[in-house]
Image (cartoon, rainbow, N blue to C red; front, side, top):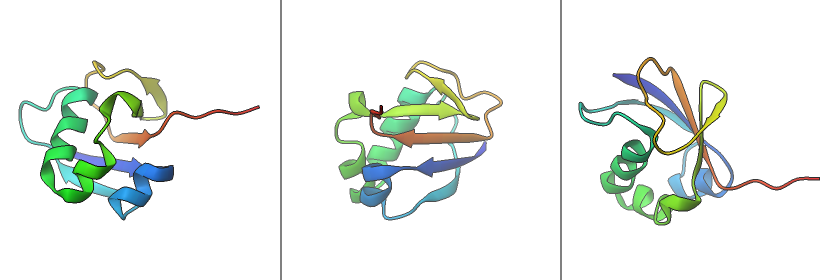
Length: 85
């Protein structure tokens, strides 16, 4: 499954890219598995996703938790926790 992944804030800095299209292997069915797979791909991913519990995600613009399924997703955005006022 081809999937566009967008990286934001320090996740983008650590990955060294703003976005990419990846061919997600079979068995990567949810956000948590995607983050683990990205962390295992290379040193940049290992650095960006060293603390997966800190990563927030949105599927097609909707905030989702780590157990959210990727089925039918076109884009996943990955970013650190955000604060605002």
